[in-house]
Structures are given as C-alpha cells and as structure tokens.
Image (tube, rainbow, N blue to C red; front, top):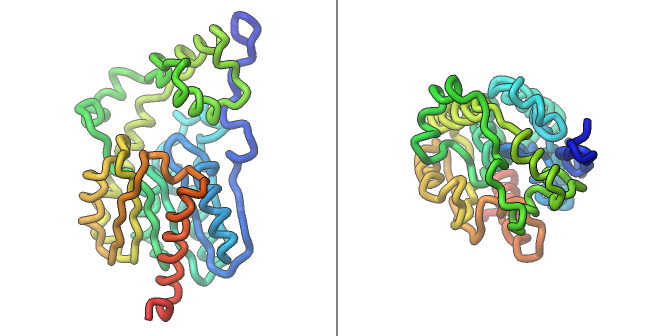
Amino acid sequence: MHTQNGHEPPAFFSEPEHQPFVLGNGSPGALLIHGFPGTPAEMRPLAEYLAGQGYTAYGPLLPGFGAEIARLGQTNRRVWLDAMRAAWTDVRRKHETAVLVGFSLGGAMALHLSRELPPAALVLLAPFWTLGGWQFKLLPLLKHLRPSVAPFEKADFADSAVRRELAQLAPGADLDAPEVQRFLRTEIRLPTAVIDEVRGLGQAAYTLAPQVNVPALVLQGDADEVVTPARTRRLVARLGGQVTYRELAGDHNFAKANTGHDHAFFTDIAAFMDMKLNPQLAC
C-alpha cells in the first residue's frame, strides 16, 4: 500500500525495542506492564536497571498494541487482562518471589492482578484510573454515536514534541511529506469503543483498590496532565495495603526517561523492592 504520491504509509512500532523482552537472570522476577497505547519500550530502561540489580525483568506486549495497533479495535479489556494474567502466572511459576510494576494503564492492570494473585511488592507509575472531561464520562454512549476518532487530525507537525512522539510511533516516516501528514491526519483512527474499554478497566481498578492489600510504591509526575497528581492521590487513599507515595518533577512521560537525572527514581524503586523482599534491610 502507498499514499497517492508514492510514499509508504508509516509502519507503526516497527523497531525491535517495541517487542516483548526478558532481561536479566536473577532470582526475583518482575513483570513490567506498559501503558496505552504504548509498548514494552516504555518499560525497558527500568527493566535494564532492575536486571542489573539482580532481577529477571519481563516486559510483555498487550494484544493489539505495537505493530498490531491496526487491530486494536478487535481487542478489549478482557483480552488485555487475560494476557497479563497469563504472563503474571508464568512469572510467579518461575520465581518464588515476584513483583509487579505498572505504568499508566498498566498500573490499572497491575491493580487487577494484585487483587487476584498478590505480588511481594507493587510499583505503580502514574497509575491510570480515570480521565477528566464530560466526553470521557459519556463514552459508553459516544462509542455508539461516533465509532472512531482521528488522534492526529489536528497535529502540529512543526511542534518538536509532536515530532518526537511520532518518531517513536512510526520511526522512519517522512513527517515533512504532505501525503504522510495527510495519512496520519485522516487514515489513522482509534475506535471509540477501545477508549471505552480503557475507561472501564480504569474504573474497575479504582473500585477494587481497597481489596489490594500489598505493599505499594506509587510514583507520580507533578506536572502530569494525563494522570493528574490529584487523581492519583485519590487512588492512593483507597489502596488497602501500606503505601509509599511520592511526586517527582516531570510529566506523564517521566517513567520513560533513561537519563542520569532520572536514574534516581530507578534507585528508589529498587530500594523499595529490596526492602519489601528483604525486611531485614530495614532494620
């Protein structure tokens, strides 16, 4: 398939970094669940750090995500949870001690799994449970009235932040080519029903949060406009176990960074997990 001027349509999430991974060979296992509409690439920097600290880190890819993003509309929250439940069961089978880490929508999934099959420790990074706006509240109705939305319809291709995001989404795409821009604006559509599945998954996670009685570390970007600090504080207040909550400088993407500045929170996560796995270290 080509665009009208002969350009290849962008190939989404085609780089190897977006594939599932297993890093390290340590005794404790860690399952790291990515967000929406992300891939294991979001979790790889933290996984590499944990592998260096003696963990075996697993980064699964949610069904319908990554290179399969075109079939996302054929999936739903039950399919996503079934896949992560299978992955978590496998990690628990392979490792006597296992921990869960979830970013954004992955945080909501980690809450579901923690209630069903409790981990030794739980780490939530900007955990999603709801979005603001009246449109989000009306999604159960809107999905029948407007089958899909075009997320890049009004994208400013001159904006450096937009270009960085699209470079990760579709590496190699010529973002200056008018036909590629047209393709991204008009041909890339996200089923409204999928967004409603995200809403339902988050709402269910919020409801069951009091039943999650495991030690948890919750990290939140103080400038996050996707999962706001105020909403995360509401979720933290509902968790049934002992919770350590910390707000960090950064937006929703703070967990994806792999720079010297952000390495400190990797250390915080490893220290928290070690303390919960080895209580004598707290003495």
